[in-house]
Length: 66
Length: 130
Image (cartoon, rainbow over all chains, first blue to last red; front, top):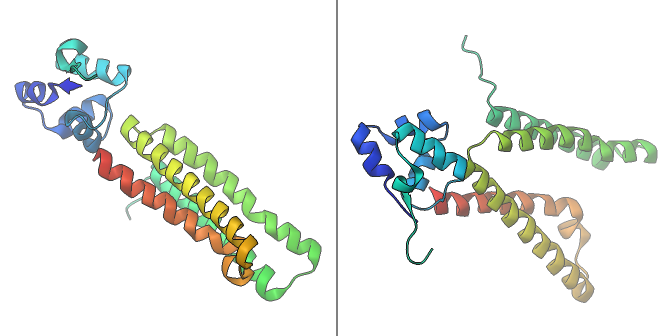
């Protein structure tokens, strides 16, 4: 699964720490999700979309192998 | 004086240490002081009380972790449990063949292995997700 978290963060000028604080997870967890090592739950994906002011589909996208 | 914050991690550590201390005290009394049988049996079950406190706080602590940390804990527990099972199975089979020395491979000598397996799991899982 691909994601655009880094791009969305850059748009808002947020660090991983900033995003982590806004959605209530650790910075390491944000890094795991951003680098695609961990697929977040629907709840967490929705929280991310909410703080970025966008939809889940615009942040997370399935790849051919998914 | 700065107050120590009561985070879930601190509580888990506190109850973990309490459990270990009670176990060690009971072990020393049972082994060195050779109490009468009934007291020995009571002492053998004493660490169960602190274990219950530890496991309650551990599960509560895991519940308050974020989902990546929870996955790490789950995978570490799976590593710890399955490697522990493998160790017991292997020793069980070996014992049939070469009769293991109980002073080296008794139940209480196996306890540290379970901690090693759990922390090995934590190491593997953290490398995977962080």
